Amino acid sequence: MLKFSKENNAKLNSIKEWSKIENPKVYSISLLSGFSCSFASDCQTYAIENKITKKRTVLDGKNAKFRCFSAIQESQYTSVYNQRKHNFDSILAIRNDVEKMTNLIMDSIPKNADYIRVHVGGDFVTSEYMLSWFNVARINPNIKFYAYTKAIKWMQDNEDMRPKNFRMIASVGSKQDNLIVKLSWFRKFLSFLKISKQVETITANVVFHPSETNLPIDKNEFYAINDNQGSFSLLLHGTQKQGSVGSKALSRMNKENIKYSYSR
Image (cartoon, rainbow, N blue to C red; front, side, top):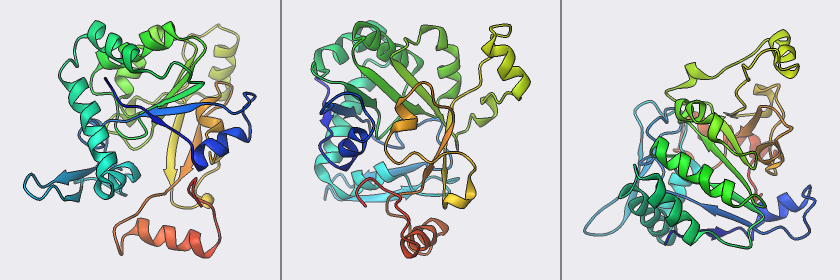
C-alpha cells in the first residue's frame, strides 16, 4: 500500500479560504525528492541517508539555484523520509506497468478525498506512472487531482489521456523548459475559437521576491487547483543554504513581512 498524508495544517486552512466545499478533505502523496525528479535542474536537491547512522544530509544538484523545500523536509524528519522512500520504492519496482500501478494507487487512495495533490515531494518517474494517475483520476471523477511536474515531454505526450479532474502544471526550472509552449494573444484567440489546437502550457515558476514577477502569486493553492486560472508564480520557501542567494532572499522577505509559506 502507498502512504498518503492528510493535510490538516495551514495548507488546508488556506484552501478553505476559497473552496466551495465545506471542510474539504485534502490529501497528498509524495516520493523521494531528487531521486524521482529526473528532469529537475534549478531545484534539484537530495536527502542522502547514511546507511550506518541513518542520519541524512543535504546534497545540492550541480545546477541547483535553490534548495527544494521537500528535500529539506526529508533531511529533517525521519518519518517524512521513510514514508516517501516507501512510496518511491513501491512505485519504482513496477514503474513501467500501468495496470499494476493503477491497481496499487486505487487500493491505497483515501476514499473520502475532495482534493489530492500528487507529489508534494518528488515527480513522475515514468510516463507509464503518469498514465496510471490519469487512470485513477478517471475512475474517481469526484476527486480533484493536481500536480506540478518537470517531466514536460511526458505531460505533453499524454495530454489526450488526461481527464478533466486532473490539473497538470509545468514547473519551470527543468531540463525540458524548451518544450514549454507560450502563445501570442492572437494564437490564444485562435485556440479559444478552436481554430487552432495548439494550447499554451500552464506553468509555475519560483521567484525570490514578489517584484520579480508580473504573474499572480499562489499562496493558497487557488491557482494550482482551479482550471480556469493561467500561469502563476510561487515564492521561494523552505530552508536555504546559509549565505546563498536563496537564504538572502528569505531574509529580505522576512524583513519586509512578506508571507512566503503556508505556516507563516
